[in-house]
Image (cartoon, rainbow over the protein chains, first blue to last red):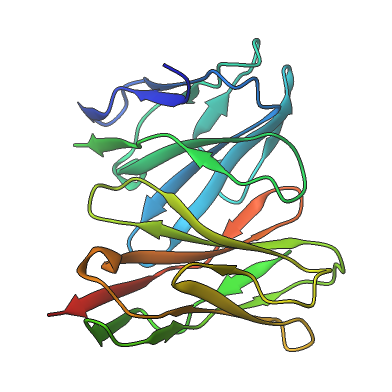
Length: 113
Length: 111
């Protein structure tokens, strides 16, 4: 099915473990984003990518790593998870800069114990 | 850096009434886009309405309309004839290269 999908939808892990959240979109959108949603903060940008092999930091990049070897995939890795990274993570894509809206995945709820 | 402020963490409205959600933003750019997104309890983010900054005419989508005041950097959302299904978190967003979101307003609709 066309769209943007995230996996896993729910994940519980322990402090210090590596976690990767996957994101796949079928529209061939050039832009992809990772946001985290925390109460009182809205959505904060972690990383974004304007095209394959081009990534850039957002507002809260520390502790996260991204890659984009293919246009359709944009995985987010927490190299050593911390409790402060407990959050809901949204992947999103957009066709380009301008009036194009942001299309969201369903979100991944990550709990770090 | 651009910032988006939503000064009303929570609001409520009676069913069939009208409610206005406030949003202000800060930018030095002249060309940009503004959006309102809705997030119901399902967590899915849904586009409600968008506005191009170069357009003076306020955008409208059925029961949803905006009051865009570019000089004041204000972008409020008006929901007319509120329905129970309108209950959700509403996020105002600004776009230039990336999207910047406000902290959200939780809207309750009372029967």
